[in-house]
Amino acid sequence: MEITSTPTVPQRTKPLLFFLHIPKTAGTTLGGILVQHYGRDRVFACHPDRSIVGYTAEDFLSFPAEKRNNFQLVRGHFGYGLHEDYKEPFKYITILRDPVDRAISHYYYVLKRTDHPLHQKVTSENVSLKDYVTSGMTAEMDNGQLRMLTGPEGYEAPFGACTPELLEIAKEHLRNDFVVVGISERFDETLLVLKEILNISTPFYLNLKVNNKRPKREKFSDDVLQSIREHNQLDEKIYQYANALMDELIEKHIPFFRIKLALFRLRLRIYGKLFQWSRALPKSIQEKLDRRFFKVL
Image (cartoon, rainbow, N blue to C red; front, side):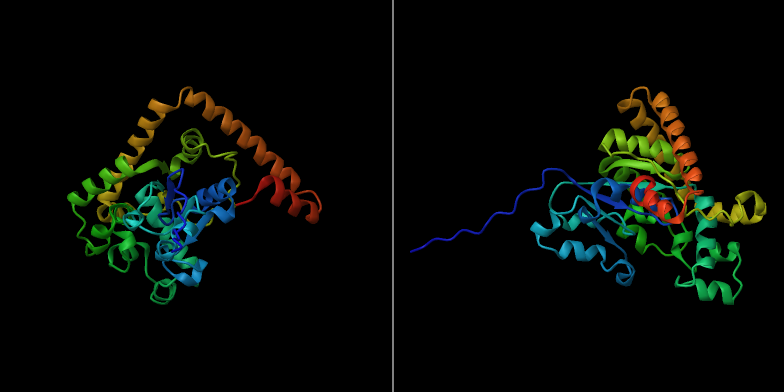
């Protein structure tokens, strides 16, 4: 009798990286840099709305192991916990942002994007920033970063009902399962940490997606800013904790960090000057440079 054996699926040699992309934290720019490093065919992009990029996070888990092992990075707007149905080695990375600036950015993003689910309501009803944050229209404005870092417990908490216990859960997740926790306001430092810890290559970037037209926080009244802070007190605490984690990572693992950071920023300035100079060249040459050298994000 002929005996056949089921072919074994090669085991993953390196942990799969889950990039937990919290909206409005510079995650799109970071995601673009990661795609440049790993290659588009090694990155699985997903979104809760399948129509956006064609896949959800759950789609990745439904793939056979052999297909999943083709990917080195999973990126998208998903919360902590995706790994629970993934039985191989993994690590997370993410990037956080100051909660007040994130709330302002989120509101003006909704105003700008006609395809956003809340755009029609916000514009037709002339919803103010304060009302957008406090009305319960979206849980994103009620400790939204904490909710994503906590996982199902955070998603299920009603608006205004996030607890200190959720904060402790999120802290535990960051410390145990995240290899790098970046900070939007410390983006250059975040890139250097990624380079040193994960060996991410050539982390140069030109971020052309910044909305320079939206007002800065200084333009808003103390009443509006205080309302944002009150609804994001736990986000502020997890943001401070993430900053401390980054400082700890730098101290322990990256010698001469301040020198490396200064040199990196000098090279970035030169990179930016070259980009500005290239804008005087013919359009066809500009496009080639953008694709092959500048890699505009």
